[in-house]
Image (cartoon, rainbow over the protein chains, first blue to last red):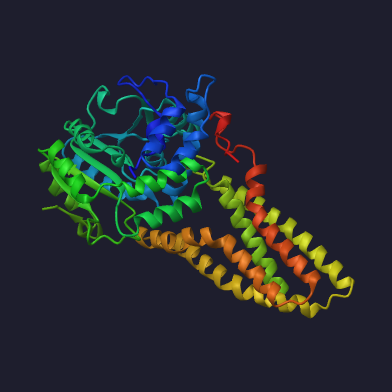
Length: 301
Length: 177
């Protein structure tokens, strides 16, 4: 069985962020060919226009419900706090190095829950928060949510690496596993201008598949969210793959892993970040980390 | 004491059902008021179930069903529900009170997630144990009704609740049913 996420198949955008029509039958066929009959059934219920093409508004509605449920899971697992504990010393190091208000860009931000959490709680000090996503529906919802709570962050539809002005920090959550092989290296190689890159993704381990099934069935209601949540966990990249991709895509940077395998506790390190920092940032960053965080960071061989 | 214990569990379960029915519907960061209202709605739904079951018990008692038949069944149900409830409450207290992220995550991964998943099974098993300990058809009927009502609270709230995301979001963000 080839592991495919339905959300990757239903959204096809060109490099300018414009959406191309997608036929539901094609999505269903791809899932069937991949041996995923359950996924094919879920995709077969997605709303279509009279010509058989997926209804963009209907698909956005489904994806938005999925992301709202994903946010609920992210809140339970305290992803905002997890991000803050790493970003706080990192941004402090950047400020000390002469950037008073670093720009932090969240790639594939979805509803932007991490940025909105950071903006609401302000645990990381002065920072410019920008979220990017290729899905215009997500960006419009993220903007509406940020406006509703008067949050100091903004969301941009389009290519995160084509924004005017460079980002000092690039982050993502649950994004890297969507990229495979050369695509993974290519996307990472587009982040060379950033001083620091921090990507959180599902930490694969012996309990990942079971845990993903339990949590997505207990916490999600949308069939697509349940399906994609489990598939995401099953195709999460190993530390080795991510470290190799980071070294290939960002050869000038120093790679660090938090809660690296095999010391990782699978019940606690559900999402773990991989970091790639400019060499001059490493020592100030590590010096600013609290001891418990420093102990969990390692430089892979 | 048995009736009181079951009533408290029913209302707590209603409250948590309300919270679960609201979860994943509001994208805002600060959803304390939203969650409070959801818990209140769940508790009210639990109260409705409690009123129905109390009325059923009173009618049964009035028509000659012995009180002991209820206490027998109730004791069996509590033997299942109380350990489950205590574990969940302890994990919830741990999640709320402990600061280290690792401990909070452990509460979620070990207890809160899996125990949410097995909750319907626990309700059915508890009622089945009560049924096994009761030789009264009337009590059996009330036990089946209680099982259905407890399991119906969350889906009912899901269906009844209007969209609760901020009004600036499109109306289609209402949960699918």
